[in-house]
Length: 582
Image (cartoon, rainbow, N blue to C red; front, side, top):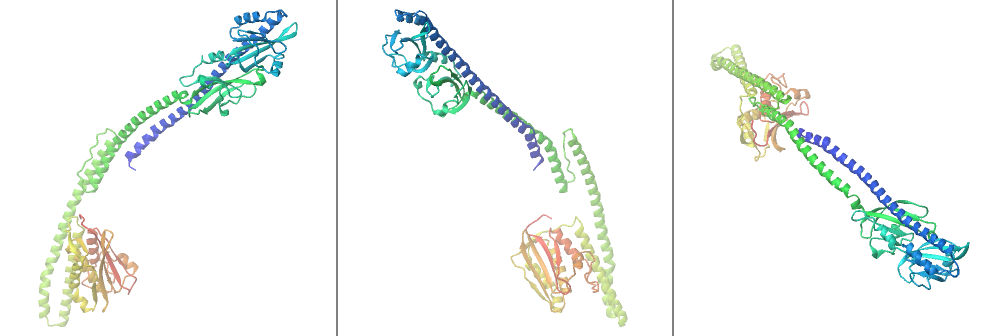
């Protein structure tokens, strides 16, 4: 991973990730806080509404008790009950109907309507005589409107004389609840213990039942809490509830006020905040990322220049300078880098001069060494031919061989020196390998025939290599002549080649004297002779060193393998399979 990418990721990790985590933390905390606040608000609304309804119920209950005492205080058989009820109705305006029952449960008087029968069973009437009762399951007399009935026994001189009934329409309750609103989707409604809706903004569902799962867990005692549910229209709702429990409710029933709101609206401020903070984080994160990318680019651009400069210098362009104007340590580094490059350039120039002088010296030395030998080698054959003394002739022949060896050694030493020189160029061309090997075989044919050695060219005629023809001939000549030289009579030498991955591998195998492991490790060293016991004046010990240098200059490698002494040897070398600038 490049430094530019690392720095960008570092900025992302150091800046953006903490922002996201902070965002998640604040959104979570806000959600919890808003959730608790919403639940508390809805629950408190339900409680305050329930208290207002409770006060109304208690007020009506107290009014009916007060009315029963008023009637009882001056009750007589001749009392005009209708007149008294008319007066009471004008005073207790929240009641829609008053009915007075005698001890037999018959209607003795009613206001404002003349009612003969209120439709109550005898058992219920019997309970009315002994209890103050509030019932929400009654209907206004002569009407289908459901109402709340308040009743209280009437005593005159501590003697029961009847029961006073007061009916209040649920419209009074509705008016209380209609005074409360919760946003655009919230509302307050009232149910009883059976799940019957007693009040609701949607008048069409009043006095219908709600599913049991929507009924809050209120059973006994004053209680309140919160609830969540999904409506039949798949709207998620959240709300609070508070119960209205009165000992005077018939059969221990209760009412429950429920304040609810759609969850989406309840948490709309949170959603808005979340969207705003998300947008803020995206904007800030984008700014930081762009800043980070720019900052990392500012840091890595000079480093990239240094890298490119190092590559150009590595390729040999020591005149290249890296220009950085950052005013910091990177500029100082570039200046030091350029100083180093200048020093390298001067050193290379000096080295090139020394190498050139060395080349000139070697060439001159070779010329000076060879020149005296030429006339000697030209005269010696004539002298040897005219010499009659066998001992002197033998001595002259030995001198001739030694001079030839010295000449051969000088030539090979000069070759090796040239191959080491950077001025020595390689002229590449496409060469049919099989034809070149055949020429090398023909060049060694006389020696092969003298030793009756079978030479085989196993190279496919389709194989071609890109190489310097003269230098490749030198390699093949050295390897083949060595194979013939160290192979006994009636032996065999094979030359083969194969295509490998991106290269051509050539081998020369013989059935000769073989090599030990130690000899294999030194065989390509200069002036090394695998068999020093053989006084071969034609061998300078440089042939394989020259072959190694040529192969390596072509971008290949050379090595030897042998099972051991007396088991033959195989020399391998590779050449790139294609054109290559050398």
